[in-house]
Length: 344
Image (cartoon, rainbow, N blue to C red; front, side, top):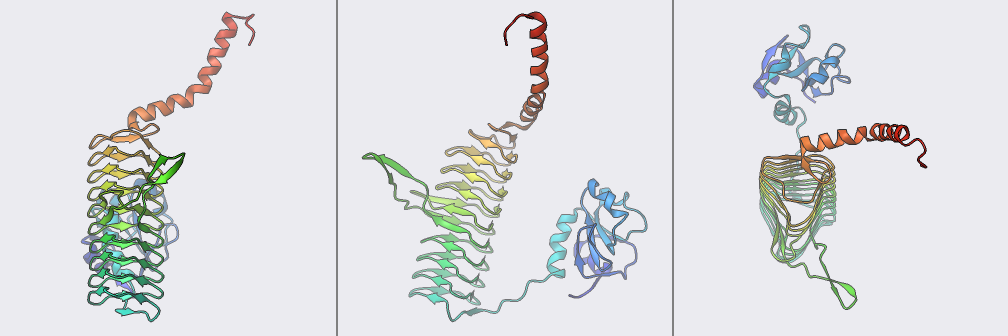
């Protein structure tokens, strides 16, 4: 791994250097574990206590916190350390180059169209009529069913399954174990039993979407399940049939979204949130972790708790619940004083 001087780091991140410009680093690590050849970052007040003892060669720090970093610590001052990392990490840790090739064990059926510079890993199956764009990378043991489309520069990691007719845009990232276009959970009660409703819609993923490991996105029952451009989905998320996710939505791990739900542009859904079907989460709304959403969420609002309600209201309710044991004890004392002969 090559070394980079702090001068180079400041140029890459657009930051202001304070300290020896010839200090050289070749990696990034947390403040408490960083060594003398590594850079670290101070992204909030709670990390300042680690700076005094850090062995890091230098730190990335925001403008607002720079004055609180001890003077002896070299630093690169940037508007946002996390944004600076997105610029710096690809330089410090470049991805291995993947040579275009089709592994001898891969199976490509008739009518498959491959763009330029495509790489397909071992034991992958691409069924008839599928189309892979330029610079697509497919890992090992991937199943791409008939009639799928994968846009240019998209990366699909090992053990992903694309069911028939799935369409994925350009520059997407699909992590291992994801299942896209599986049948939605739709049944009708007929003749004394549950009968499966055929799921004949599609699954459409627009450009620049990231889908986490072991996430499942169902196809539509009729019509499409859609995920809008720039949306980022964490691991272990379930998205039901006919859901419509807008652009630049963030969904954290272990979220479950029931069918026919709309998540509008820029919404943020915290971890382990459950959302019932046939509702709308408005643009820019934020849903706190483990919330249970049973009705529409207004655009720009912040909700939490179960049932999900305005965050401040949910916090007051939670605080009141914590006081409940003491309140019950007080009521008990009052009852015993007023009604001393009352049988419990």
